[in-house]
Image 1 (cartoon, rainbow, N blue to C red):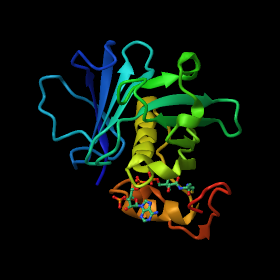
Image 2 (tube, helix red, strand yellow):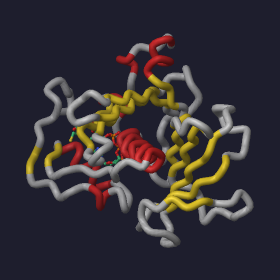
Image 3 (cartoon, rainbow, N blue to C red):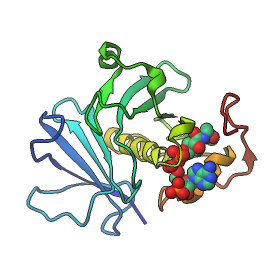
Image 4 (cartoon, rainbow, N blue to C red):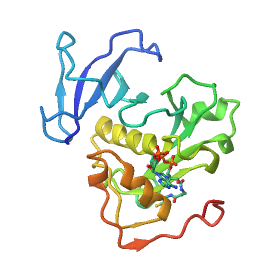
Length: 212
Ligand SMILES: CC(C)(COP(=O)(O)OP(=O)(O)OC[C@H]1O[C@@H](n2cnc3c(N)ncnc32)[C@H](O)[C@@H]1OP(=O)(O)O)[C@@H](O)C(=O)NCCC(=O)NCCS
C-alpha cells in the first residue's frame, strides 16, 4: 500500500482556530507513495484519512497532527512538543508526546511555548527522534506504563506527517533495534512496516528501562 497526501485549505473551525492548510494521508492506490496532490474542497475524499496535519497557512509551521484510528486505534488523546535540533550532528528532530489536558488533542507546541507552560518534561508519555535529512529514526521510546496503547505507532506516524509537511526524507529504521522495537515493527500496518530494514543486530534496551 502506498501513502499519498492531499493538500487543501482547512475548513474552519479547526481546533487550533488558525487559518491553516490541511495535509491528509490516504492509503489508496490513486497516487504513488509520498506524492502530495492538491485536493479542491469540493472533491470527495477517497476515504477516511490515515493522518491529518494542519499547517500554518503562511509560515508552514505544523500546528496539529491527528493520527486516525486506522493507524493507531484506541490511543489516549496526545499533544506534542516539537524540538528541532539543527546543531546536532546529524541535525535531528525530536517530537515529544504528552497525555495531559494542557492542550487539545493533536496540538503541537514549540519549545518556547512549552517553557511557559505548567508541564514538566518528565510528564511525557513518549518521544521519537529522527534525522530529517535521511529519515532514519534514531530513538523511539514510550514510558513503560503507557506501552501497548498505540503511542509508539502514533509517534512513528507523526514523524511521517512532519516528513510530508516539510518535504523531508521518508521515515525508516535501520537493521539494529531492541526486542520491543522488533515486536512493535512487526505489528505496523503497511507501508510503515516496509520502511524498516530486516533486523540483523539486536540493540540492548535502554539501561533504565524496567521492561528491559
Ligand atoms: C518499542 C516501543 C516504543 C513500542 O511502543 P508502544 O507504544 O508500546 O507500541 P504500540 O502500543 O504502538 O504497539 C503496537 C503494537 O506493537 C506490538 N507490540 C508492541 N510492544 C510489544 C511487546 N512488548 N510484545 C509484543 N508485541 C508488542 C503489538 O502488536 C502492539 O499492538 P497491541 O498492543 O494492540 O497488541 C516501546 O516498547 C519502548 O519504548 N520500548 C523501550 C525502548 C525501545 O526499545 N525503543 C526502540 C529502540 S530501537
